[in-house]
Structures are given as C-alpha cells and as structure tokens.
Amino acid sequence: MGLRSRISVINGFIKHPDDIVFSISNWEKLKYLIAAIAYDFGIAFIFIIIMNALSPVLEPYENLLNAESYTIWVSIFIICIFTPFLEETIFRLPLKYERNFLFRGISYLLKKDLSIFWIKNLRIIVYIFAATFGFVHLGNYTNTDFIFYVLAPIIVGSQLFAGMIFSFLRLKLGFLWAVFGHFSHNFILIMLAFLFFHNVERDLVDNEQVRIKTTGIAFTVERNPSFSCDTLQNGNLLCLRAENISLQSIIDTLYPNQLLIIRDNDQLDLDLFSKTAEGYSKKEFIEVLKENYTFKKAADTSSSH
Image 1 (cartoon, rainbow, N blue to C red):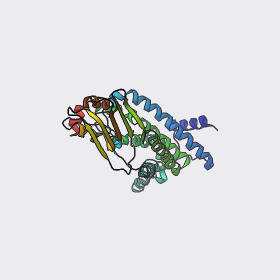
Image 2 (image 1 turned 180 degrees about the vertical axis):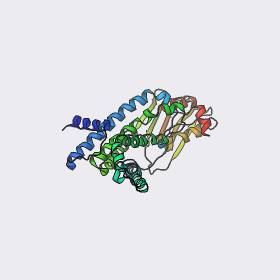
Image 3 (image 1 turned 60 degrees about the vertical axis):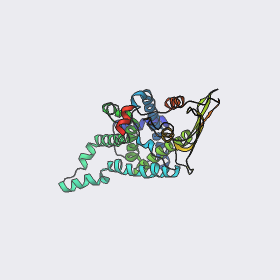
Image 4 (image 1 turned 120 degrees about the vertical axis):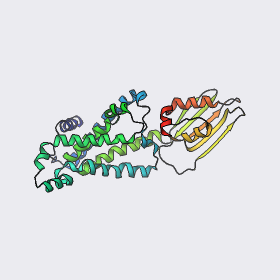
C-alpha cells in the first residue's frame, strides 16, 4: 500500500470516523503515521497560501505565540513534548468510551449504559472534539473583531484538519501514536523555524547610499544584548549596531516621541552602515522597516495602551 492509498484510508475515516483499531504491525502503523503527517502538512500549506492571499485583511491580528521566546531545547520540551501530551490527553484520549471518564461518570450517576449512544454518535463526537481543538487556538490571537471570527475557520484551518488527523491516529492506531504524531508535527515546525528564521541573514537595503542587514533570532540565545549608534547633528544615521535585541527596543530608542508599535516583536541583530558622509535619515530607515515588518495601526496601538 502506497502513500496515496493510505491517504485514501484517512479520507475515509474523516468522512465516516470509527474506532475499529487496525490489526497491523508497528512498521505498518509507522507508515500510516508518516502518510498522515505528510497529508497534514500538505493541507496546512494550502491554508498558508490562502492566508498569504488574505494578508491585508489578517494583518491586524497578532499571534501571541510570536511574542514568546525560549531556547531551542526549552521550545522542544514545551512545544513538542509537554503540549502534545496535554492536548492529546484532553482532546483525543476521551474519544474511546472506556477512556472517557467524565462520560462514564455521568453514565454511572444516571445508572444507564451510554456506550451505545457513544458508538452511534461517534462521528459527531469526533467532529466536535476536532473542532474544539482547532478553535481553541483562536485564543492565541489578539485584536479580534467580527471579521476575525468570520475568517476563523481559515485562520485555524490547519489546526482543524490536524485535529482530524490526530483523531485518526488515536482511534485507528492507538493513543500513543496520536501523541507521537502530534510530537512529529510540532517538531517539524520547530526545525523549520530553526532552519529558515534562526541566524538567517538578509539585506533589507544594499545600495550606493546604505546597507541595512538583519539576522533573525527565533530562539533565545545566551548573548548579552547591545546597542550602539553614531549620528550626525541633524540626526542622520552613520552606523547602527544592535545585537540580540528586540526590534521594538530599537524603534523606541530612535523614535521616542512617536507611537510606533511592531505587531510581532522580532528579536534580531541589526547592522546599518551609511556609505555616504551625509548619513541615512531616520525617516528613510523607518520606511524600510515598515516595508519589511508589520506595524500596528493607530487604532490598534491606542487600544493596546
């Protein structure tokens, strides 16, 4: 059985969930796990494309997780071990009636066997748990309004689908496979962040007037923050060197009398070097930053203060 066939089996489960466990070897279960994670990321990629297309509308909504920063090892523990085990215990373990101690407690109090009800309504129950898992992630965002909730199924679309994938792993392979699938999903995300955002240099500007270079810091590093800046009497920048410091701190230092708030407060290294004796104006510098980073609008900044 190839990847396409396994995805077809997963689709069959999504349409009609059941709790009949596969009687297959661990090697075959591992193949299903790999297929499920590949399918999960394929759908997530589609949602990323949709969200990028809607970026002008989604721009005001700040993901609070972007404000958190930990070392790579702490991130792996929290995001890849602790969180998957906790969320799978809450949202997937109870999908089996014999493991749903709350429902069994209600059954005991009512002195009525509810297992038949559970089996008959398993499809709805799986959908409810998956939807709850997905929509819980809306709590990661701020600045919510009516449009936000209209777009909510798109904003957490990848989590909604992941909820069904993990439900498949839990009911067809076993609870530990759902935990391992969730771990694998989050671990891949951590590694992608490490490869594409941590210690990655990029030139914001490099022309005959100035060079502005940044190095992203996705995870906390053991390095003291530092900031130095040389300016002319008119305020133009000759050079600027910032290490392991938040972009918001740089902006607050250079523009103390302006209400300029970054939506995602990136930690970074930043180098600016003016190639002319006239220096580089702060007005031009902030325009470069606005082209490359998302700033909160005036209404958002006033509501957050």
